[in-house]
Image (spheres, one colour):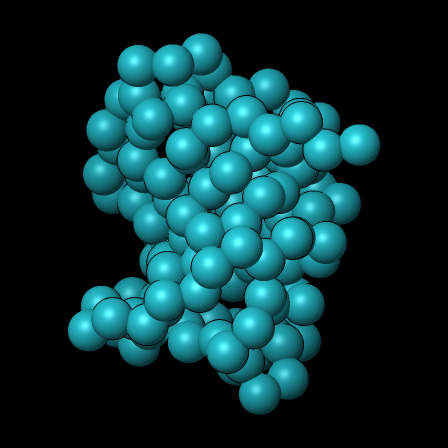
Length: 130
């Protein structure tokens, strides 16, 4: 992993390794500065062009299950890099430094400036999206 992305937990999936520029169904949970869960009421626009499928709120925060293409157009830098090497069926928990997330801009009313993010990713499978 590059500096600024730390793998906290890595459960290897049994499927094929994910490939750039392909769409995958994935579940994401995000915490600000490793403590405060990020909760959204709809597909987060700050994640670019995701196609929201479900959004669930639990005691652990919000889990968004959605389809994203694995590239920097759809995902922020640290998440794109942190997913590299994952396999379908895998789960990974990352700590992402602000300079690979939303830097000093943040995302208005959602992510404060200079926030470190803790992200849990589960890759469910490849999606065929035109």
